[in-house]
Image 1 (cartoon, rainbow, N blue to C red):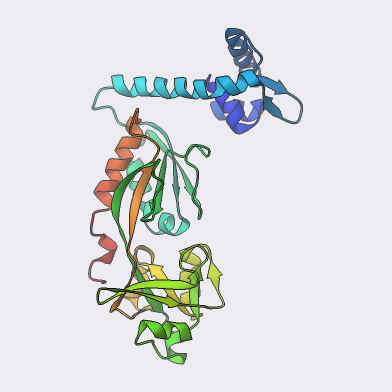
Image 2: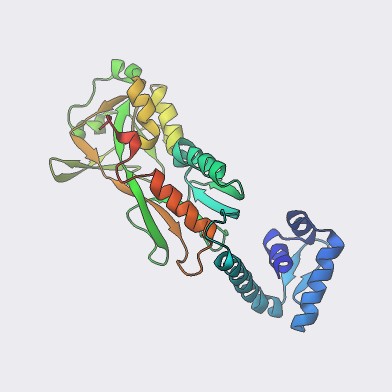
Amino acid sequence: MRVFVSVVDLGSQSAAADHLELSRPVVSRYLAELEDWVGARLMQRTTRRLSLTAAGQETLPRCRQMLELAGDLQAAVSTPNDAPRGELRISVSTSFGQAQLMDAVADYVKRYPGVKIDLQMLDRTVNLVDERIDLAIRTSNDLDPNLIARRLTVCRSVICASPAYLHLHPAPQHVQELSQHNCLTHSYFGRSLWHFDVAGEVVSVPVQGNISANEAMTLQRAALAGAGVAMLPTYQAAGALRSGELIRLLPQAKPRELNLNAVYTSRKHMPATLRSMLDFLAERFTAEPIWDQDLL
């Protein structure tokens, strides 16, 4: 069953053989044995591609269930002192992955060397099931109700610019003045409208600029180069703000705060490795972020 699922997921018997560290003939034999056991042909094989038969489409989700149950059984009978082991596929935005999660993952695998992490840094919302993601780290207050979310910490942002930009453009004193500045915007978040809490009131300001990007690290580099005013997450910009490379603007106006969540598909039959990673991240990313201390 594991061979069958791997062939489908990876698209060829050769790729599955490499992934499972088996020979190609062994992979072919296992597929033939599964077809004999099921009593039907599961795949149409050509030199260019594989396609599932109707029987294969019925068999695939059941094989996935059986493999998941087998993994759960192994986890259930292991002793509490057994260290987590196995592979976790984690999805995270490029900015948070580079700024914070990579160091956390490095510390985790030092503690649990039997675990292998496949880190997918993607600046889009992934489908956890279709892309075989065990855990996604998402910054949002609006999550898919079909998923399970564990809140890790809060994500705050700041309005900032470099000293070079501010030397040529007077710093805004009120949020409305941002409309007169070259604002560096995120393609998917507040591209034309920035939202603030000012003295307990929600204020929305239309913004525009000549640079937009789909991830925050690029916007920070543009801000450091003096290209304009940026709204950046503090988990990423804290170092540049403390060093003076970036100057915080409009401290009386707080950009909208978002929750940083660990998201997964189900609490039922949760693998021990996933549970240990969730506990590790909850321990590391506390309710009050360490990167905000003495900054806001």
